[in-house]
Amino acid sequence: MMKKILMAGAVSMLLASSSAMAGQLDTYKNMLANKQCTIKYEYIYQDERDKFVTDINRYVMKYTAKSETEEKPNFAGVIVLSGDNSYTERELGPNHYCEIKKDGYVYPFKRFETDKGIKYQGNKEGQHGILAFGAPSDNKVEAHPVNDLRELRYGNEYGGGEIATMLDVIYKDETALRPGKVYWLAASGSLSSGLTYEDYQWAGANGDVDLIRYYFNQGALTKIASVHYVKKSDGSVSGKHYVVNIKEFSSVPDENYLKLPEALKDVTKYDKEGK
Amino acid sequence: MKMKKTIATVLAGACFCMPLHASIAVASSPCAMLTFSDNTRFKQIGTADMLSELVLEKMMNSGTLNFKETKPLATNAVIQLYDEDGKMYSTINQCRATGNYDAVFEGRQFDSAFARSIDLAKEGDVVEPELIKQIGQESGVKYLIQGSIDGYSNGEGTDALAYVGLALAAIQGASLLKSLFGSSSSKELLFGVSCTLRVIDTDTGKVIWQKKGYEESSVSSVSIGNKVTIGQEDVTTKTFYAALNKVADSLANMLVEDVKQHKLPVDMGV
Image (cartoon, rainbow over all chains, first blue to last red; front, top):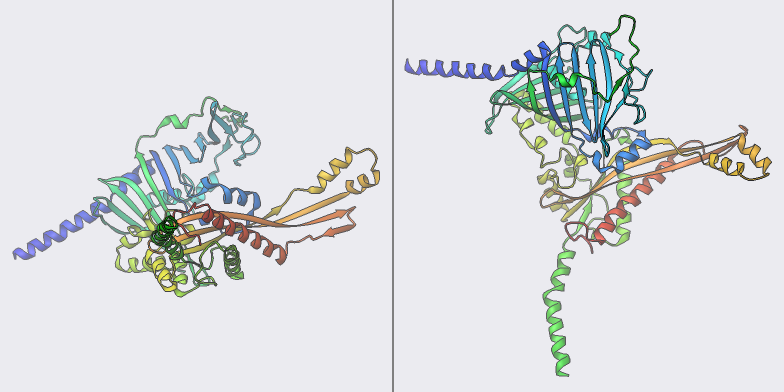
């Protein structure tokens, strides 16, 4: 009898701890669902093969082949969500590629440091949606309207590339017409280091598979690692691996990021309704 | 006479104690070349084999390195070494069956000390130490030289004829030439190959040297008055081989020069 009670207790404790661990992403899911958060991350590993898989422009190749700085191009990034307004930033070398989405308009610009201080370059006038930056003296930006159709189709995407996928797993915009891959919780547990984790997976009918592990330190999301494998028609497979370190993931949007820098002049020709 | 004998004895002793030891150390550092890895979409055309043989031939001709094998190694262990994605895919499927994914996320593939794959390995990274050791033991070498084809590029070069036209414009007279070049155009098409070469210590699997090389080859044509075209208008197999030859030269020279200048952390030189 005693044995049975102990067993039942152990089972219920296991179930309780498993479900408690499995729910660790819920805090972050709520932040994304409420569109209220500040995320600061560092993209640790980017597969170099992405750049060297096909024939590319010789100038690009020449530059990347000779530039040592291009190797293992880790980068830092920022994502701020405040209702329908947002800010994303990716730091690539000396350049910070930024985008403010505010009141239905998108303002893409680049921030970089020079000997004379911080400079800004907005996109060129008349080139809506294209990150074609003007001359260094430009210091102006022309916004373009938010692509509502794309958001309706795929839902909101933040940060671009794999970081967008990793956030999408945490919170999928189910109102999207084509929400894309659906990941499910595959496992959860703890490591000898004291960290806990949740594993999510997606598997395609043809053998493609994605796995994403979310690491937590006392409930706080600290790291995301993922593998993405594609099965080719000849039976071979090719994979990509990514790691993102989460430096901050808070429920307070840093509103400072949502303001255009003072040195960057807004030259948008707004329609009759205004902003 | 006695003095001469003493000096000779001391010199002989010194030779016996030091240089012999040094020469043994150098002679005991044989190396072998692995077939290049190629993860580009042009893998099927067999560039990796051609390039490996070219680089090996050029390095052997330099007489700087002590090659144990005169052909690039392409053993089963080498094939396994290049199939890191296949191995990881098997691991993933095993993990999916057991529901424990630690082998995927807590293994070497996510350990920063290890290279994710040989073609992405940087200097200081460790590549599959057991397999590298096995290849070293099978071939009896201390160092492996390995290269990867990173990609191909194409594009147009500078229009040399435009410069000729500008130069002619500055010359008084030359009206016939000017009218000819005025209605002419030239085209330079380029084909480039980007590769990486590495040296790996078979005892540890560590990449101890690595450099990138990029070279291109071109064809040019001149069209006069849209009627006559002189030269070659398309990139051909010849251009492709020329680019391969140039990049093989460049890679072999980089390693040979660095060995000669003792820039490697070990003495591989003969």
